[in-house]
Length: 99
Image 1 (spheres, rainbow, N blue to C red):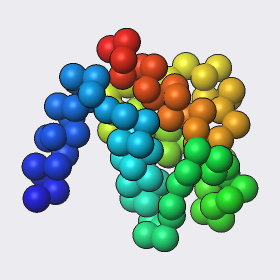
Image 2: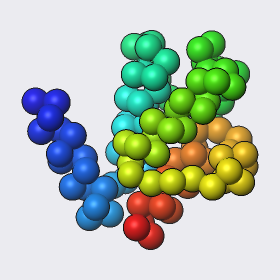
Image 3: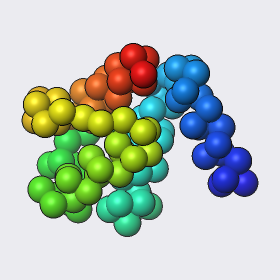
């Protein structure tokens, strides 16, 4: 079942049919996996201060995992400009639309 969901998600990404809510849900799954915490529930206002496991090292791991998941690349200036998860989602959405 997970494989089918993953294939569907990749198809949605390529067709630019993803909503911000879809992106947030997938980013949340990446956070759960990378930070190994099933209790994580992201929203647009979530910051590193809200999640104990989210430190500078895990931030790099999260960015790499998100890039791999969505098949996109971030510029360092984009990453540095994010103030919360919502800004990250906006950046992902822009990259998916222009892909």
